[in-house]
Image: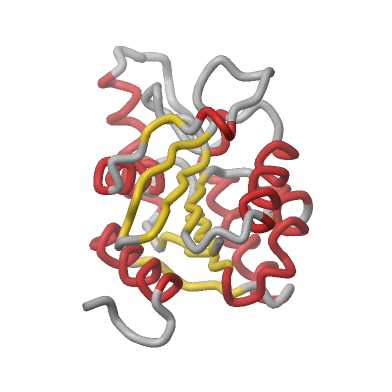
Length: 199
């Protein structure tokens, strides 16, 4: 198994990309990758580019990704189990998990080398803020929104995590937010077919 981890703050577009991949792969709830602590799916399994495809996290509500999984240790365990399965395919995961990117989750994938890629969305902060505001209004949430308290702090943390990932010798790529899905698909194809493009 190879893995792609999409990074970005709230409003950057990472969950939107994941949902597109979920549809493209016809992935359904993977009961094998379930856990007693969660009533929701923790992973979905389908096929992408003629290879097995696993998407970690739950996408049953508006917000999705690995942030919906009860513990980051479960994420690390699932990644380790998928790698040890020897299956020739791809696992995709996204979520903030900022403090665990180099630690808990990072430690689980550190030995994967170029078989694990971290993609960082280059979405500008003002775009992220507007998307979060729009999302809140769409849900009927009219409470005052102060991006300084959460989003701006997380935005800086994700940028710092990118630098830390590079310093820790993880394979890091930047994802063009204006064409995020196609950019991600390009990198997924490179992971699945490193010797050349698919057909």
